[in-house]
Length: 337
Image (cartoon, rainbow, N blue to C red):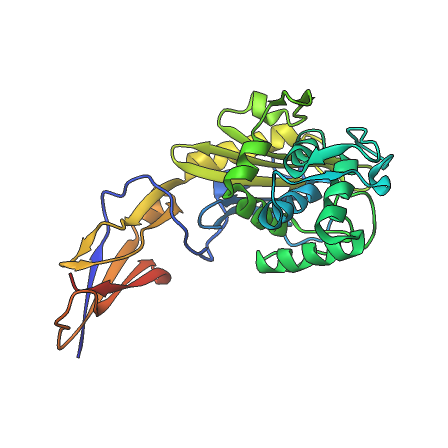
């Protein structure tokens, strides 16, 4: 036998935890601010991947050096950061932005990641790709596989740096998902939030770190075909956001508008704490979600208890579900204590 009970949630606190997006995505405040300046844009909350604002977010577009977000997190996930290797001749003299690597020089993976993300070194991108996979083609294949796993299913990568190629493109939404995943990695966050890497004298090109309150990364990009592109992460009040603007002449100003609107409209709410007891039963996972004040008033919790009740601690005694209006946000088992 199963007995269901429903109750409204109140007194929601500000914390973060992984969860799933809902379909009601667009913030009216974010959509209204300086509309039309970017060819495509998207704002997501990092832990939940909930889309808070988007415009033309499924349009295939070149993304220039913001490509390096995926390059960096792929290398971080797969390679030993303290490993040293000699710069291959293929990485010397790569066109575009560079840290002027010379063939035969010895670098660690970690050092090259700083050159990649702070100085946008295309030579660093090639060196890291060859170290990771042995060839640019093999690395691009790994990039595409990683992108699909991260939910970036409308993108295609052919190089690790973002130099122009008609086969190399993404969408604002895909890039936001990749960046949100990357920003959950401590090493990645440390690198992209660094304003100046003293061992090599590399200053970060990303002006948002100096001009926007709470900015913690991630990457600029520009080519003639892609225009000005910017991916930014910022954190305020316990909520961490990623903003993507592609082909945006006023990329810093537009990004600030989008982030300000999202921070104004949304805040993180704890809908279930991992230490919480639900009608005398234990849960194992916390759950938090970005909500507007109006949405927070429409969150409900449904408890379903199983009878006969289990006798031993740790056995499943029921299920708890959390809804925003009629849409299921989260569910987990309840356990005997």
